[in-house]
Structures are given as C-alpha cells and as structure tokens.
Image (tube, rainbow, N blue to C red):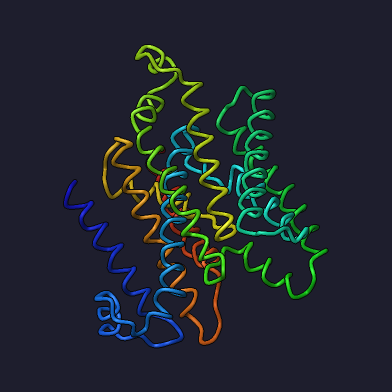
Length: 327
C-alpha cells in the first residue's frame, strides 16, 4: 500500500513539473531548477501564470476527487458526485449572478454567492427526495439532475444579459477553465479547501461505518443522520470553492473514486480519501495541460478535456460492473 501511495505521489509531482514546463512560452528544465534555487529567471511565467494555475488545478481536482468519494459512499451510488447531484449547477448560478450584478470585490462575492447557490441546491435536493422517497439513493440522483438542469437554464438566461465582452469569459468559465485571474484566488481560497479536505479525511471512520449500513452505525454508537449532515455540509462548501475558481468540471469527482478503488484495492476510507485527493489533482492537472497544448494558440477548457476522457472510462467501469453482476 505504501508503495502504491508513493507511486501516486511521484506521478503527481512529475505531472506538475511537466505542466510547469509545458505551454505556449518555452521554459527549459534548467530554468525551472534555477527558479527553485531562488533565481529570478523565468519567475514571471512560473510564479504569476503556471504556478497558480497548477496549484489551482491540483486543489480543485483533489477536492473533487475527495467529495466524489464521499457522495458515492453516502448514497451508495457509483454515479454520485457534485455535478450529478446538482450542487455544481447551483454554485454556478450564484457565480453568474455575481457577474451579472458586477459585484465587487469579486474575490468575495463570487465565492460567497457560489456557496449560497451550492447550499440552496443541496437543500432543495434533500428536501424533495425526503418528501418523496425517504432519501433513497436513486431519488437523490434523479432530483439532483433535475435541479442541475433547472439551474442550468437559469444560468443560460442570466448569461444572456451579460455584455459581449463578459459573455465569452462566462462561457469558458462554465466549461471549466484555468489560466484566468481567478487562479490567483487559490492563495486565499486554497487554505479553506485544504482545511475542508482534512476535515473529510478525519471523518473517514464515519464513512467506514456508514458504508456498513444504518443499523450497524447505530450499534457502534454513531448518529448516521448527524454524520451525513456534517459530511454533506463540508462537501458542499468544498464544491462551491472549486466552482468559484474553475467553473463547472464534471467527471473528475465521478471517475476518480472508481480508479482509486481499483488501484488501491481497499475499503478503508482514510486510504481511499487520500488516494482520491492525489489522483484527482493529477487528473485535473493533466486535463488542463492537455487543454492548453493540444492546439496551437487555442486553449480547450479543462472541464471539456476531463469529460472527453472521463466519459469513456466511466462507461467501461459501468459495463464491467454490469457484466460482473450477471455472471
């Protein structure tokens, strides 16, 4: 297990250095290592552009991976993640509202309204599901998709009121984009994201118990309802912060837990959460780097690249599980 974690960490570091070097402006390995030794050469590119961008992708990707695992465990559904539960849609509505109203400073208002929208979406999904089907897993996913589509329609409506110069930026943001001034927000929002991820990792024991079932949790002295509420609140907050920085990014939170379970081959959530954080960071850094280098002078949003590669992987897992269940 330690060797597998070491391999994941080494891969994340290697991908980060590859992303630092790769881009429209050439940066050599010697310049990177000179920068690491406090040389001023190439500092503008590495500290103001690629550094914050890679750090943002790492923290957003790691958060999505961890949150995706939490929701899949809570709902016992392989399709659960912030995107399918409607949380990302609610968060994006709050952010677009902040853009429409031109609220300043944006560093405060976009994350704030994004968080409000995210919690509103979570509240609506939980209330609708509770009234209809007693929080049954499939109902949560169904209501989540409905809420996501509804908020998506509101977002498109809100974007129609934006001026042409802001419309393009908002469109790319909704597709999941790095390389903007929001990358610099990671220095302010990053510590909160790290804290949220740490809190979820400390809740690993609760996830282990909840995975065994309601009755088992009660027999061990846990309050399943209380634990679920705490996990959902932390996960919703992490989702909102990620959307504030990068916009809508699907499939990272969906695919990462499946890959981690296959690779680590364990049911202990402390190990799975750490692995999901490492792999989610790696996958989103790769998606962002591919997006900004796949075509000359054109950047493809990281969210689009993540969906392009994530969808076939997820289909493969689901087909494999269906075959295994029929054997």
